[in-house]
Image 1: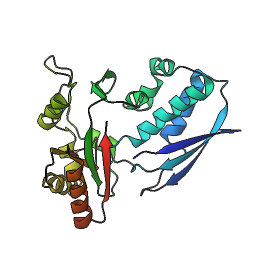
Image 2: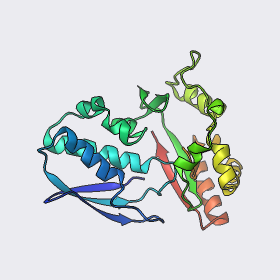
Image 3: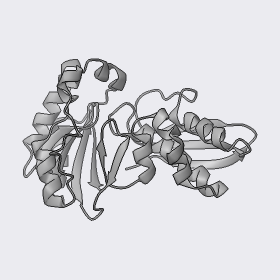
Image 4: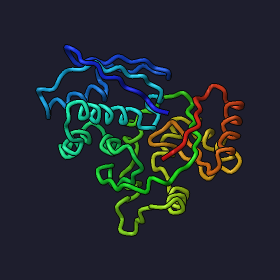
Length: 249
């Protein structure tokens, strides 16, 4: 599951969007345009492009779709113009656009510290099957974070944090961890709680958790056949939900 972006030489920077998901996507205040502007600030003589976005990841869903699109612009422009992605990372521009855009530049399994500025690559052989469920509602990241009290935050940089670099360690970390934004998002939309419970009740679900600031929820499965069963169960019970089966990592 991914968005796709095509690049075309143009007289000015433009963005056209084809969307398969609900919601209105701005072509002006858009991370793709911000990434283009950020790139151009480093390389002002660069050509202009028309970007055609085929949007498949839900909007404001806590899945990082916008951040991944922004990172794809940086990687694409670097490839076209023979620039180094490392120069983009070192500039700090991706992080200024969004706290997880820098991580998306890697496009691989990572462990993040702080607010996303500290990045540790992990073993890319770790794989899971996952069920993604969204109630077809947008959740404002800004609003969720504004309701977070600083004393409720888990210190991700505490000295006893063990970076999980095996499937067993990662599973243990996820199961024993939490999403600090989940309770806040559930208070804004109780349907998220119902989705989490429905996923957790499916056979052989390792863990159900909200993704990012919501409203998408996920369930992890080690066996693909149980993912297929869970998908059929959720789609039958809640046909109005956006529901996808994916392979993670």
